[in-house]
Amino acid sequence: MSLPTSASREEHTCEPTVLREFLCWRMVGPIHWDANIWLVLFILPGATFIVSDTYSLTQRIVGLAGLALFIAAYVRHCQHMPWDSRDVTVKSMSDVNMPLMVTSLVYQLIAAIAVAWAGGWWVLWLMPFVVAIVLYSFPIWWGMTFTIVMTSGAIAATFLFHAPEWVVYTAIGCSSSCFAITLGFFGNTLREREQLRERQETLANQREAISRDIHDILGHSLTTLTLKTEVAKKLTRVDPVAAERELDDVLTIARRALADVRSTVTQLRSPDLASQMAATRTAAQAAGITLTTVGDPRSISNAHEPVMSWALRETTTNVLRHSHAQALEVEYQPGLLRVSDNGCGMDSAIRGNGLTGLAERCQAAGGSLRVISPGDDSPWSTIVEVRLP
Image 1 (cartoon, rainbow, N blue to C red):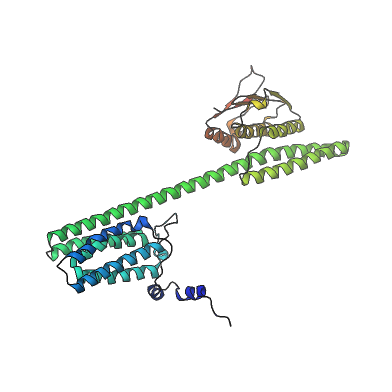
Image 2 (cartoon, rainbow, N blue to C red):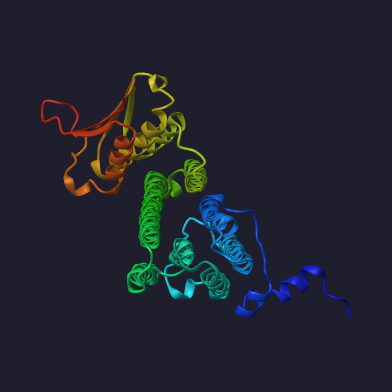
């Protein structure tokens, strides 16, 4: 039987129980100076124990030992706190690290007894540090209750035992520090909640963007596949060779749609205008729609191309699905895409997720989407304009 390694022996002997946590003094990781910088305040009671003639040698030794033990216990506790986590506040008692908490409080109680025996009222100096530990280690209402009880009890004790004036001021100052720590704790809690809300909103926006992208891709591709399949079905007996060509196009479009879905989900790329125009021409031809273009697609800047590509995809998909048009015109200008058709027109009933998502894309890019019904004097029944700055 092999002997356990030193790492396994240490892990076995330092299991997170109260007794073993107490006996196994572990310093973990670097010192967190942002939490421990305030320990410099212990210079005052420490110097008092050293230079004051009020204390005997025994009191000085015990008092300094108590301060050293308290500082070590505080630093050790801070090293075990999840400061690198996004959320350092404790939500419920089940989240409390009880072995660490009990051990820290026991060490600090021993230190407080030593300081109180040696220096009397200097024990008040420990109060803000204990409050900080409890606030960040217990649920908020437990920490608040502890803070109120400790501060009010400290101030009441100074009056009850007729403490000297400097002690009263010390108690009031330490209590004020406790409430300042509490305000900082509430600030951290509110900031964490705001960050959580922002993360949730970001995730919701990402999900909405992905769903919108998939809708745009599949809506256009499935419409084209449907038209191509219908054409192939009609040509199966009349012209098998032409039907086979249509089925080849169906296979190509299906593969392209699958690749687009994968790219969209992984956020690898946006559709490019050239490939989208080619897909639009193929779909219009399959539907028997005459497609004409005005302007040069290269006049669209690279910054505008992703939104314009989505706009072309969505608008032509709507034409193929709903308009029963015979003619379709796509016009390119710098910062402008205009898609016109002579179909049955567009009413609010068919302005669904596609155009809503397209309008959101345009607004996010600082542009606008406009749907126009020109009237009887125009050869077009519906004009969709996308303008980007």
